[in-house]
Length: 283
Image 1 (cartoon, rainbow, N blue to C red):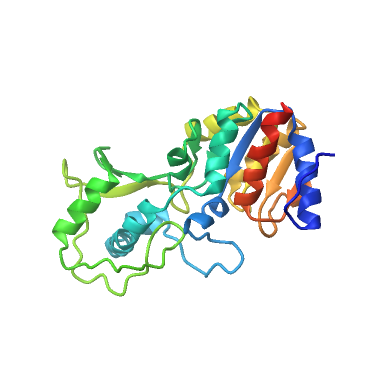
Image 2 (image 1 turned 30 degrees about the vertical axis):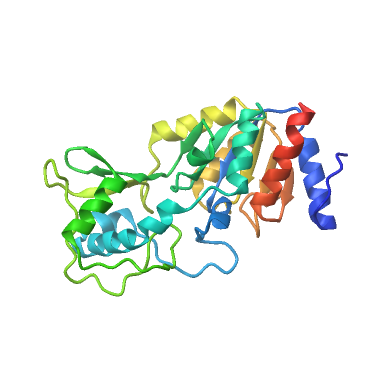
């Protein structure tokens, strides 16, 4: 068994077994919100996470008031969300890809931190907050440019110095009165962030890309996801059907704990860094 130190006895044992299961294999990575909590972005379901009601696709598309609420809260949190920096876990995954161990990252996160950390093959299952598109004409806008337009159209909005971000980078606003909702500058159509809202399906081509990454790998690591979202559990099942080792790193239970080769109940940053320090030498 591989010798790993620096953790409590239970984590050390689980980590060593995980390293042994992954040694010499090309590994696909699936990440969830737990990977980004060390960057200051909270998750929906982690221990101590506040109860929140996420925006649904139906509400956003059918209600002008819901859209106003969304854009106010999203704008208030945008600067803090966009300025979040990749943490040790993101950087470790980039190192694993650079060393040839990781085949790439499939992420349920919309924060873009894997890309900023240097990962080259990133499948963003739920989209990205970096882009906004028009639901009528399809024009795509950079979120930074849109934020500048929102500020010009709503100069009375003051972004507080310290904001309490929600999982998707939004802030609960005190009021939405008088807010001018941004429209498409090409056709005046409805703008929507390029993310998959609750109640929407992941684009089929995006899921096929994630499946291909798992299909061309020899093991799967799930990091920071409770696997409540069906897309994640489907990828785990794809790996299990091929009898690939599945290692889960997450604080608290996940839907696939009983199916994992090894489950490590711990934070992701330290464990992923340990993988990056150890696995390349075992190829």
